[in-house]
Length: 244
Image (cartoon, rainbow, N blue to C red):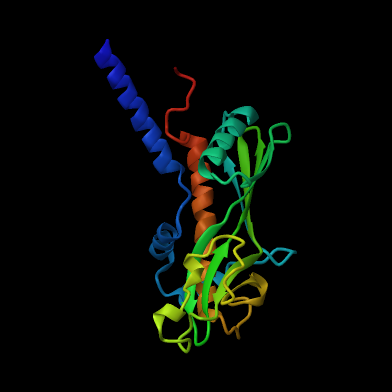
């Protein structure tokens, strides 16, 4: 009996471990690997190639939309699967901004940090994005809408090539500063509207930075849609069926 309990506990821990691994949001390093596998590591070329098939919406946002078919599954079954996926994946308390079972709608807004970095002559930039992910649920299908309007940029005026060479004087705060920390005068926040930067604007002083940011934002949309489809078809851990 004791051995059976130990075995059951081990099985539960294994399942929980699998959930933890699969439930983690894709980190910037993983996203970069994912993007390079699909679009190559020459960000300018990749952004230029993608630009031919990209179109900004009426709000000048980068928006992707895809309908995922789930034949034979009810609206309630799909809602439960996506609610489970969303709450397990996006850990921030404020990430799920709408969760309406009756309307069949889940809206998520979660930041993926440091998708692109660039050291310029005077400044060092770190780019993050906060996509809005909307899941609309009907009988037998789900529509995924992924939208990014701007890049969230943390600029470090002590991190450029012509900044002080003494490392003690450099902050490199883009990877260390906590959210809403305004104590470091060398760091300041900017928002770069996607429509005002490369490849939508050819002459862009931040061309290289925005090329990688665009490719990473595009790759993340693909990753999100893949994860939603996987959650609908196979569940989060692969054992969420009714046969128990």
